[in-house]
Length: 377
Image (cartoon, rainbow, N blue to C red; front, side, top):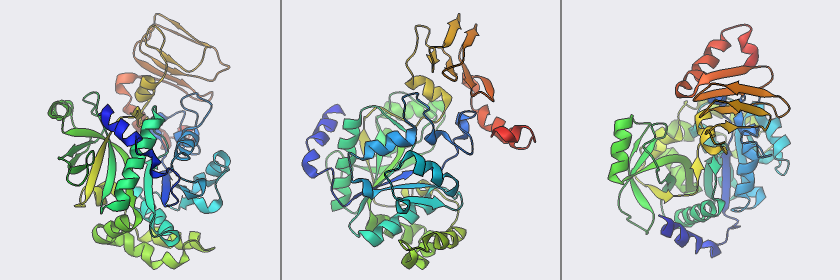
């Protein structure tokens, strides 16, 4: 696969700042699996979860400045987070921050940005990507997405990026691919499988026919809107009805009407798993979806006992394999723990077995029902 990446890089004279290239960054999630650091009023995409000095959304935004002009970057977020986006991405105008009036999964918000961009540029090629992923090798990422943009600008295709798997991980979706039909290094998608069990994941890896689903999409605006009209007509009808109001002062009111008519459905299920023209590009750029504390442990620098520590003020004694995050000015001493998550946010302390971190989401649901606990969600 590395040879293919080098081939991608050789095509960077395609023009990274092509004015037809657009980016839509999805930043509306709550991030409940990263509680207690991630809260409803400030979820993980707006946090410096990696202790790098930059929030996740800021890092994602800066990465895409290498691919398209700043005026072609849009943020899809919940209306409650518009001020957070303004604060962290002051380069953007209000017109580039699209507030969703309701959480209805990814299909309605992607339709929103697609119809809005089409009004401005009918030749637009759009990357849709989450705001909270880690990309280690940004040069490979830029090369791969540039390859995808070039491909969709010349073909009737909906493209997704598939990560070359390094292990049989049960936390990711999988994409099965066929041999290339149109162009070398771009493969026709055969099947999507959501989070298989371990035995199935091991079988997938052994075949060499499967990639991890990164949830990063690239398409031409005409092709994605055609897919909405064909496969999700309820969504396309809602936005066609208010299309003339987009990019006008009454856009926000029109969007409220459109969202009330939209079903709660993901673009994966509604379009990508059903469309006949879906392709995947195998990719290697040091990717993680950063979905859990355990995945954060994998990305942090570790001490000699495999502990990931967010601060030099965390002191470890006879403890191994832990993920420990605490305020920088707080002394934390941990003795005797193995394979635990310890998160201190000042007002909440979480201590959880790392192998059972799936309970964190249930904990947040339980706390919402508790008068005292709901204050900390």
